[in-house]
Length: 302
Image (cartoon, rainbow, N blue to C red; front, side, top):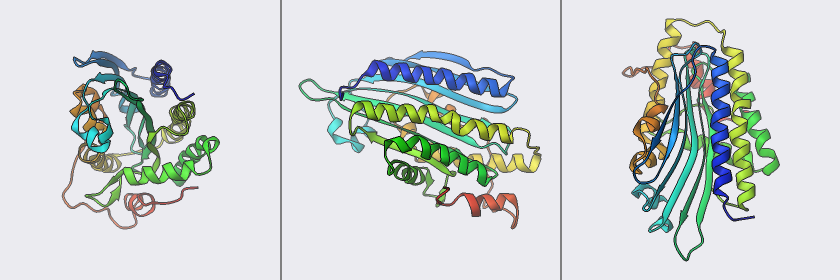
């Protein structure tokens, strides 16, 4: 089967949003997600869910969107010029979780589907997505677990799949102006439309469903780790890198804003509190320095 089944993709994405929200609420134990549904004048809409000021999570946003339009923004046609003059649909689930405890990593995941159509022409479609981890204090066993889950979900789709998408993640989530990775990576893929729709959809489902398997054990292991003002200030400083990446380099943020998406939903990825410090460098032989020397490096974690 190579004909895109748009309804099945949308059904999966809505179900994924539900399951992740349910688990994150259970882990937090204090707050639940508040939902806002929205409509887009040009076509489509979504449902945005945000948990704020929880016991475990300072902010978690898990959004579903399905937008439609008759003309793509310039950022999209520059990347794929063959899309000019086509109508399009783009749908996906995107999430960012900012824990309160600095020993629990921030995380991001996204799975999405895009299709562009023009009368008399075959549709152009692809899947994209992945998940990545951004610790403030590194634990090798956590990162190995994260990458083991990524490796194992990729394995049924070919031995080359994990190293290919692991490398793509390392390259994509890299702050060129800092010459620094955003975190310890994971998986990232885009423009996936081979060998056929069914295989691509199955892989995307594996990535979406694998996120909780990768993240939840790390949260449960680190949630009771005690922390103080020193760790909090370092966490807020490192969150600045997250903001810089999303506003300067992230293609999804740019596409969402240029396509007239809901700004509040697009920018829910931002941490609620953040700080910058001029010319900061960690003290030698500290856990803060270890993040830079041992974790913010390109490495084969398996």
